[in-house]
Length: 317
Image (cartoon, rainbow, N blue to C red; front, side, top):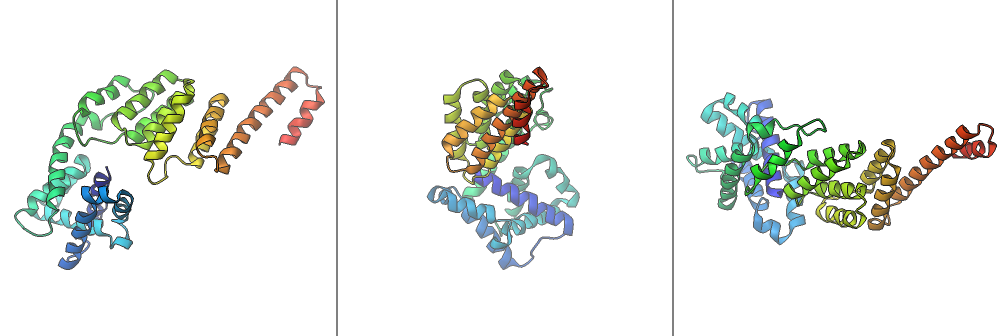
């Protein structure tokens, strides 16, 4: 997954540079060679196995100045080679086909040149992944819509279409967002189905496990929800998905949807796992304040002359 993400950045930023300026970022052979060496060193299974966090950080740095913008240098060089071989117009198809065909085509074009090659291991990975990508990134998959009004059978079909493939499109974000949308609409059965699909297809994605946590909470399965949240946190290597801020915002969305009970359940699970995060306690207070205001307004509706309720309500404002 980390290697795929790196190749995607090589494609995204390198091709964008070439298309904007009409030239590779560097024509200096030593600079280009150094950039390829950086990619080959860190986009490597052995490096990731040896020290995953360190290697992943290097891959995340690849497009930034701290790494000499190595991925931009590599990607723009690849685009230059492909454009020289087949014309600049030929680059347009990669916006539809994606990064793996782009890199795989460069590997084939590079064979005749003999310089600036990917490592043999990375070449093999790209070759195998590109075949899987061709089978999974089909026109029907590209046209999928992830929305409550969409036919769920089309999404379920991904199980069969992606079966056996080592690389396929990443829809974890879309499935997670759709799960939340279903829950905010109180369509819990659809949310559970979508979350189950997310973890089946993307078992290493923290967004998938967070989606399942939310769906299980709304189904009253608190024990499973706790386990799901732990898995989401374990897989969130960068700490960018399962944060106190994100969980607090989800609780607020539940309140807006009129699902205060689910907001409390989420925050209880979150506080159990992240007891040192003050934002979660503040979010819990917000939920209870919202409930208190609702009850006080109800008291005034029952008896508009009931001053005790009005006094309490004024203190809460």
